[in-house]
Amino acid sequence: QVQLVESGGGLVQAGGSLRLSCLASGGTLSGYPVGWFRGEDEHSREFVALIGWSGDVLDYAESAKGRFTISRDDAKDTVYLQMNSLKPEDTTVYYCARAQKGNRGRSVTGYNYWGRGTRVTVSS
Image 1 (cartoon, rainbow, N blue to C red):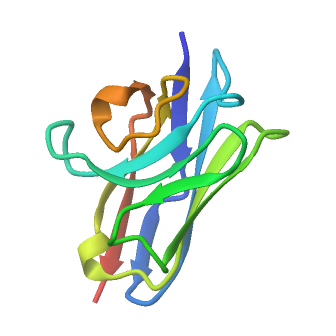
Image 2 (image 1 turned 135 degrees about the horizontal axis):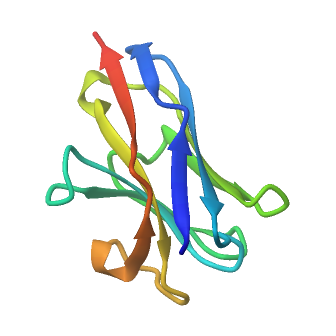
C-alpha cells in the first residue's frame, strides 16, 4: 500500500517562505504525476500545482502562480512545493497526492493516493 507523507508545514509570517516535501513509502512517486492540494477537509480540497512524471511542470492554480514552485527529485523519490510570499489566505492544510499515470487534471478524482497533510499557518 502506497503511503504519502508530507512535511515542512508550520507557522510563518506573511511574506515568508516554506518548503513542503512529499515522500512515498510502500511505493514510489517516480514515474507518476504528483499534485499538491490544500483545504481543511477532503470535501474542500483545491488544486495548487501539478508536476508531470518527467519533471515538466504542467499546471499551477492562479493563486499559486508566481509564488509557488513545484519540483521533484526522483533520486530521493520526493516532490517539493516551495512557497514564497506567503499570505494569510494561504493558511490551511496542504496535501500531496499521486496521480494515476497519464493524468494531467486538477480534479481530485484523478489522484488515488493521498497524504494526511501538513498544516501551514501564515500570520498577518
